[in-house]
Amino acid sequence: MKLHEYQSKQIFSKYGIPIPKGRVAATATEARSIAEELGGRVVIKSQVLVGGRGKAGGIKVAKDPAEAELFATQILSMEIKGLPVRKVLVDEAAAIDKEIYLGITNDRSAKKPVIMASSEGGVEIEDVAKSHPEKIVKMHINPLLGIKDYQTRDIAAGIDLPREYWKSFGDILKALWKVYEDNDATLAEINPLIIGKEKRLVALDGKMLIDDNALFRHPELSEMRDTDEDAPSEVEARKYGLTFIKLEGNIGCMVNGAGLAMASMDILNFFGGDPANFLDIGGGAGADKVAAAMRIILADPNVKCILFNIFGGITRCDEVAKGILTAIAEVKPKVPMVVRLVGTNAEEGRAMLANANMITAETLADAAQKAVAAAKGYQS
Ligand code: GDP
Ligand code: MN
Figure 1 (tube, rainbow, N blue to C red):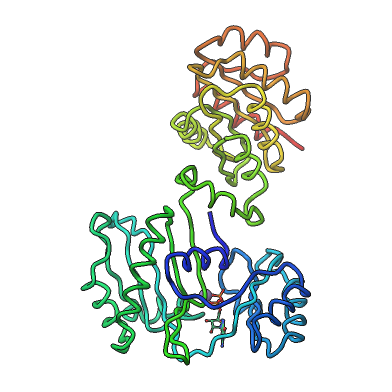
Figure 2: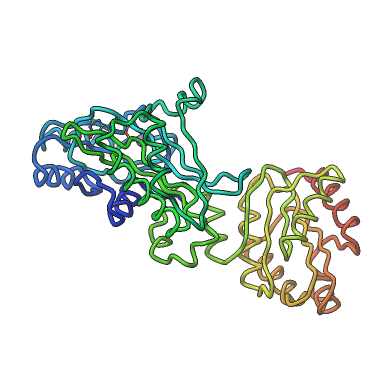
């Protein structure tokens, strides 16, 4: 899950990282009154969950409240990389001497968090990473030990930070690590961390990614979720507790258990098919969940066939059959459907589906081949 800049910076601030004074606004009038409160120059910043807002024209410095209102009007009517701007952050404008990059993320190959820092922060950091990789300093963190003073000094020296800033840089880096650790983040990034004219380090921008699988421990973060950027089908799936990932193929899959779902996708590929999604309805799914899953699958116009592969254990096949019937009555699918039910109450389930005009299969290989053929044969 991505957090907005203003949300990330609020978290940073709680951990003692200096941020500019400011507030978020949903209208231009609100932006104006925040600018009046702050006095002086302000920066109007689009709050959308994509990078490169600055380059896209989504960040503008206003000299007075009237201009703040004007820029807010403009920015609130923008779309940036396909996302509508619904909010702007109005911050006290900063006078910048230098822009530094500072981030912590997960280095999967090293299986450790890694600190990344650069003296060349700001909007060109991706280009710096490509053309001058030596300008990005990296250091792994032992999560049991945290960050030690010698490490913050090494990084500060590595990015040629003037000595007078080493202490506050160290405090910020340690605070950023706490932010990352406490919130189960997979990214905590400040770009730019500026040296301001007042000779002070300030986090001008903030970005955080939170591990979705840890959100159950952070109800306060879950509430911050902005679903604008998610595929609507994934939002719907989350509501029903379904594990759903949209893919590019044309065979919709409804399977119980992640392992079986992956095996089903593999075997579809093996027989020349292409799954439209990964969907695990989970253990013990009832009829309403199955019906929701079916609606989600059918909302994808690419889907030319649905394969149901249910291994009844805790999940009962008759419950799944009931869900399929409910969903059919509600959604009236036109695409062919292949069903394989085995395990608990499979007999009952099959009997319930006997008149539902579905293609039945005994084995997974059989089911996959029938699904591939049905998808090929279907003309919408
Ligand atoms: P991003 O483009 O989405 O990463 O948004 P940022 O918040 O990082 O802003 C992009 C750039 O705009 C920064 O690197 C700064 O150069 C500039 N910028 C942002 N806020 C201010 C500000 O308060 N004053 C000045 N002078 N420049 C700013
Ligand atoms: Mn930035």
